[in-house]
Image 1: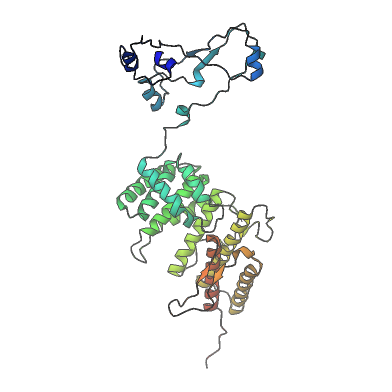
Image 2: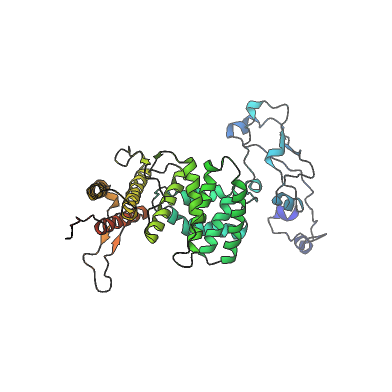
Amino acid sequence: LTCRMRHVKCDELQPICSQCQKGDRVCRREGNQNLEIRSYQTTASRRQRSSIHEQPVVVTDSRPEKDATRSPYDAHASHNHHVAQPSSTSLTAPSSLSPCSISTPQHFASPVQSVSTVTPFTVHEARLMHHFSQHLGRWLDCTDASRQMTLEIPKLAATNPILLQAVVSYAASHLQDRSTAGEAHERCVRMLIVELSSAEIANDTAVLCAIVILRVFEQLNVDETGTDAEHHLSGSSALLSKSQGYIIDPTSPGLREAAFWVYVRQCLYNACVFQQPPNIDLHHELSPTPHSWDGSSRLRSETAWANSMTWICVTVVHFCFGKDSNEPSARMLKWQELSISLESWRNTRPDTFDPIWQCAEPTNDCPFPEIRFVADWHLMAFGFYSLCCMLLLIYKPAPRFAIR
């Protein structure tokens, strides 16, 4: 107190500080003071209370000494000093004061309580999940403008261990960590086998997403063409055949619809590699069509246009690689129908699907034209359109002439 009154810095040496020892002064020290919490008051309230003797507000802690729900931060703080928690604090005001003369204090959450120490992931799992969301999710969302697989999968994986292990196996495999990828894949398959006995598994969105992601893991681990067992592709087909309705929404309003379109693209990939019809029921109907979409959401509208091109590509691949016993005239009519639907998509698609730049002519260094797009789904739609054009040109029915 002596140093404070003289406005000098005190080194707090015992029993006499250096400042008092040099000046031969009495070293008066501050005793233990009770904690005093005062409510915030406006100027009018302070004037109203000027004639009233203020009493300190007493803070009492009603928590037990050992709290089973205490966070590690609370345990650490208890070794140093007592931290008052707003949720367990009672404020006792003087009884002589009316409620109108005291401003009610605002209760804010303690920074200690706002930091959650419970995490659903280990450090390694969190790193792999981050790698998935930063680098791998966009491949699953390549025709989904809303990026549902990238944004929703990490949140859903926090509460679903099957989906978590599927993501870990995919991300670890992409990073060439085959040991972690293989162990996560085995754990995921074991849990899936247990879930297969459940009657509700067909409607479980997390399980469907997990199997779709496991299919990507399966593709990454195919050593050579022709050795793909397609186990997880068959699993996705089995789930969708039990739960998928007749109507398919190309706008992908939910995560389940987004997973379905990932499965469609996976079937397209295998169909082109093995030159076989895709394992997709073509009797489904797209609704709403991109032309009938009200456009209330631009992202869903663009998703609908990209997925509709994907569906056209499915029908074209099925026409080219499927076994058709129709007469040549009927096959020619089908070819013309596909050509019309393809050009209709090209002529009516939004301007946003146009490339922002393309080179005028190929050069010796780059024989293929360089074309740049704004978004992934624009590029994928253009790629499927180009694939359809090439396939229809190659597999155009030709007239047959009799040989005598």
